[in-house]
Amino acid sequence: VVLVRDDFGDKQKFDLFLSVYNWTSLKPTEELQALVLSEKGFSVQTVWDDYIPDLLKKFKCEDRTQCVIRVEIPQFKASSFLLLTEPKNSKIVNPNLKLVSVVKRDKPVDNKHVFDITLSAEAVAPFVAMDFKRNYGIRGNFLENGFFIFDHQKTITFVTKSNVTEQQISDNLTFKTVADVV
Image (cartoon, rainbow, N blue to C red; front, top):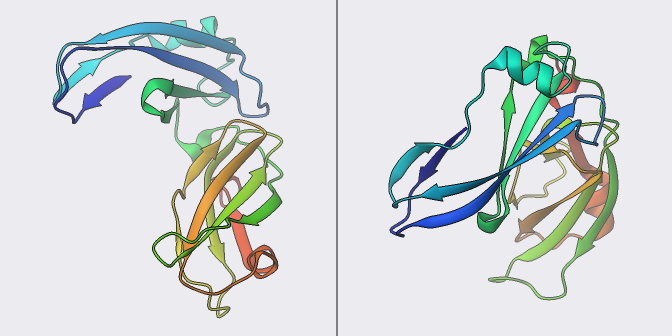
């Protein structure tokens, strides 16, 4: 795992969390924590390094196809993932994504309507892509797209100038994962 800093800060000390997941579960099979000391901004630093065969044994993965690694630095609200093989060769399962809720925030931001859209998953959901049905006319931006769901639920913010309701978003929202196409 490589840390790329693009800030002007000096020394930073923070916790790095690694969680290993079997594609079929939202409960990590293993969790590690490391204290990282970064000396300066605008730098690149290897913060975790392990030999893959040793890693597979340590994390109870039969092979590279069975597991995925979540990397988090809560202090910076940073989260990423590490695939151990190509998605088409992984044992990715259908995560059974469901729309939990669409909630419109009370106050517009810069004359735009803001919605919090919550999805649920029953397994790790890789590369979740959200969109709207064709020709419906809802335009806007998801503040995150192409994301992973490692927890049971994830909430994504949608911002639009369109005067739409929660129900219109619910009825016209589409979402899929890489499991739908591999």
